[in-house]
Length: 81
Image (tube, rainbow, N blue to C red; front, side):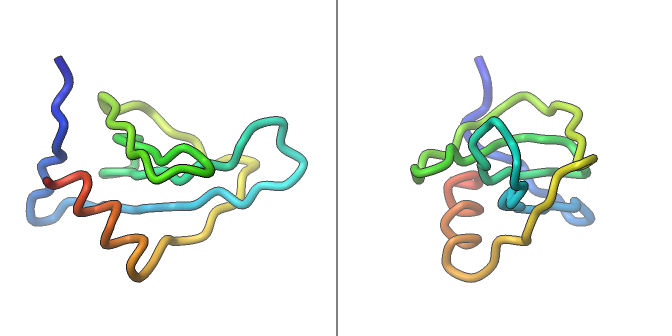
């Protein structure tokens, strides 16, 4: 069974990125990266945070913006319980 919270330790690089890629045949989700590995995402059009076992993640040929403010706080709170 997968953890429902994310352990964030000192020195952990955590990024929350919203995809902005155009000309893409897929929905642009919001991704949570821990030390450059995908650990969760928020489905486009929802507030549902889906936890994953760490996966490789490529930013190649894609564009993103950093999530900030209240949205960032909500996502991190969801991950850390």
